[in-house]
Length: 172
Image (cartoon, rainbow, N blue to C red; front, side, top):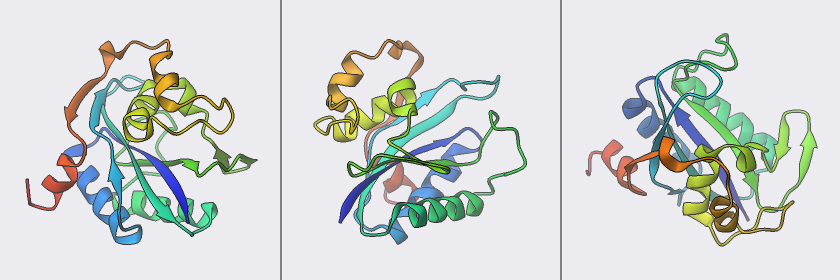
C-alpha cells in the first residue's frame, strides 16, 4: 500500500461539488484524510475564488488508474473538458504525490511541480502531512511551507479538516 495525495479545487458551486467529490473519493478509497479547506484567488485568470484542499488515502491501485478514477469523479461533478485550461472549474482533482514515486511520463508528473510553486497546494499538504518529505527536495512539507515565498494573506481557511466532508454527508 502507498499513500497517495490529491489536490482538490472548485470555484463553481464548491459547496456542492467538493462534498460530492469527497464522497466519491471515499467510496473508492476508504479512510480518506483531508486538510482544511482554503479560499484562494483564481490563478492564471480572472474568476471567482477557489476552494482548495488536499486529501490522502492508502492504495495499491497504480497511479495511472488513480488518475483515470480522478477524471471519472471530475466528470461526475460536471467538469467541462472543453473549457480553457485556466478557467472556472466545477472540480479539479490532481494526483500530486504517490508515495515517494518520481515520474516524468506524459500525463503522470510526480511529484507535481505545483507543490513547490502554489500556496493553495503546499499549505493544505503541509497541514495534512507536514512531517513527510518531498521526494526531490528531501525537505519536509512543513519546512517547505515555512520557507514558501507566497504570502498567506491571499488564503483564508474556511473550514477545518474533516468538517466539509461531514457537512456533505449530513452530519454537520
